[in-house]
Length: 263
Ligand code: LHQ
Image (cartoon, rainbow, N blue to C red; front, side, top):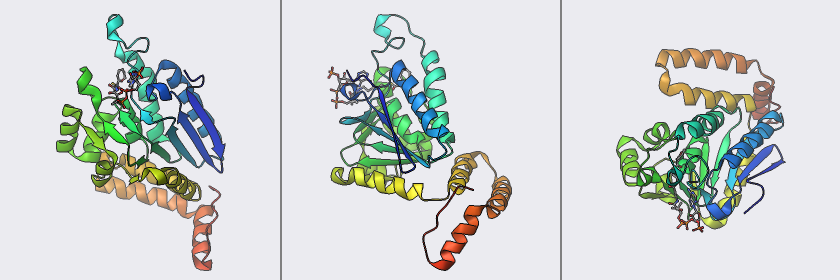
């Protein structure tokens, strides 16, 4: 067993959080949830963080809930899944969706159950070609949770969401990219480079604009056209007074790269 269930690194404005239970395909335990929360605290409390990469050790990304963990194993007596969903998954998924900086899921291998939900909560999913997404929930008598009933129909459309959720059939990464469920599927050999390139690209982008883009697009499903136009106007007006807008326009005119400060 690995001692640290989560690894954390911070370099060049990129916070890298790695799920580290490779022998269980990084399935979630209570301990891992707690360590993951601490890692997100560390990433988000550092003003130098401009992007968070959520990666995984070993051959899998995340096999969802560890079905042998205390409190969720029904072979050991009656369980209440309310506790772990309320205190672990709900805050995690909400936190990723609301994070001020973009979050990239680096899906190196199989994602199953709540591991799929975790990936879909992120702003980008970059997957290696050998990775796959398995909505394994129904196979064990449960429904998609941790946000999957929200994310899946939006990402795939209702017919495919129903099909994959009801059958639990694995969705290969390449097909997931073709269907628009994920940002990119790349050959295994190019996977690390693809994640690095995207994280460096985002780290160089204007932080306030990225935060506003993320929050507007995530809220858009619940807004009317009029509300969207009003919100765009208010946000754009504020961004128009930012140092980064002045820098972006100056860089464009001078035909050079912009250096954004986040102000
Ligand atoms: C595991 C797991 C696992 C423990 C692989 N747990 N050991 C539920 C309840 C509570 C609240 C919150 O939400 C949820 C939502 C969920 O996430 S429910 C869905 C949970 N996940 C699954 O049902 C997936 C179970 N795993 C699998 O179907 C397979 O392992 C997949 C398809 C992911 C990978 O298959 P393989 O590549 O053939 O690997 P493997 O099955 O040999 O797994 C490697 C080891 O990891 C193995 O242990 P072993 O001692 O035999 O080497 C597995 O038992 C263990 N493992 N997933 N979720």
